[in-house]
Image (tube, rainbow, N blue to C red; front, side):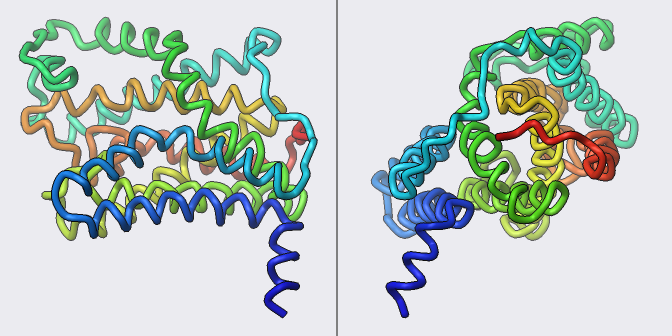
Length: 296
């Protein structure tokens, strides 16, 4: 019976891939938590620094075990779909900026009027912001064209969206496939979040509240990244969204007085910070019923 279950798992890459990648993430997280001293810190650093590469490793292992030879749903030729590129490169930045504006309108005492770039880069220094609009537009433009970070995030997207998502859609349909994919992607982040990644451990009920909020974040961005991959047949568009989010998404907290990312914001990993992204994701999710799936 056990042999039959193992054989069934091997024959279903939509199950095997999550088992491998989540198994690696949670094993490293468990070791980092249990091993005392510097050794535990080193294990955590391996998890954090290697996080974007783990899905690619899991894909290679899964393809080898299942003898999968299907082509990767990936191409650098995003210029062939300029409208979609513009939407993916600029849209998340605009919505993130609007989310930060909302947060600082609700909590005006938190806006410092300066960009504390020193804290971001691990040094000292800040830049006064005389006019927020030019600063926001410059940041949005920089995030849109900062290709190195987008290529870095391609590691996650090749695994979760390029490889796993088509198989989940084939089995569960468009909406359910995207939903399951996003939730599993969220579960993959939890070992990092447990240690204070992305959120302050001073948040109420941390780290459990931080874990719950990150699941919502991954659900929102999983829908957006999944939809971009589906309509294009190319997970590079998801990598663009992911890279833009990870660059501009780190800026709002360094405009704040406390420089702490709470469950509300100012970064788009907080409820107010992600509000417009959440609304967009809900709209996109409803529209998934009628889009053409270009994934192979």
